[in-house]
Image 1 (spheres, helix red, strand yellow):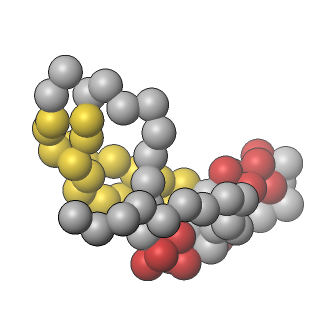
Image 2 (image 1 turned 120 degrees about the horizontal axis):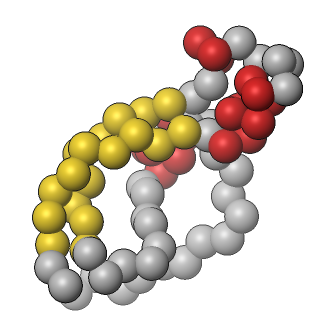
Length: 68
């Protein structure tokens, strides 16, 4: 396992579902391409508040991690 950087596209899944049902135009789907630090053994993704706001995502749950 290791770390690498990758360019990834994040998409608001609610918007995508509405687009697939023809209820939202493609241009209105919130998308964001970011340069991410990837841990090849990770099973979860964390995003910061700025990314969350740009994608217009709801908070389902959150956790604060202590700074070292």
